[in-house]
Image (cartoon, rainbow, N blue to C red; front, top):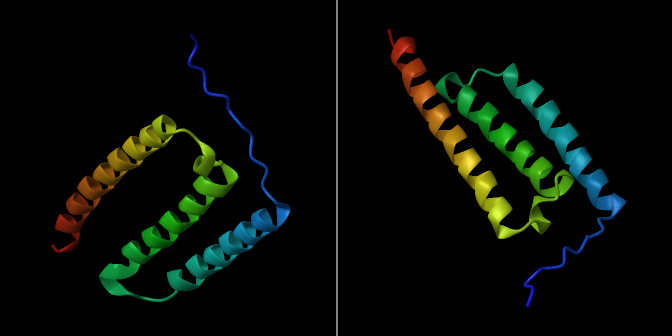
Length: 100
């Protein structure tokens, strides 16, 4: 009568954690290097792209989002969607002041 799903705990290898950690270190170094290069209007976009990649790695590997239920993933997606909307509104306002 009860419809309870059993939560299975997945184990992750230390090798994967080390690879993700090295990728995060590399991307942080890349962020520091790119900060010194003038890309003009693309500087902010490049920095945000690197931050998105880093946050994806943290969410999927360290926070184990890959093994969560679809409902939890939907909540994360909604939060990220509203964050993207906030960033879009912020940068559209910011870009109107930069042009002056």
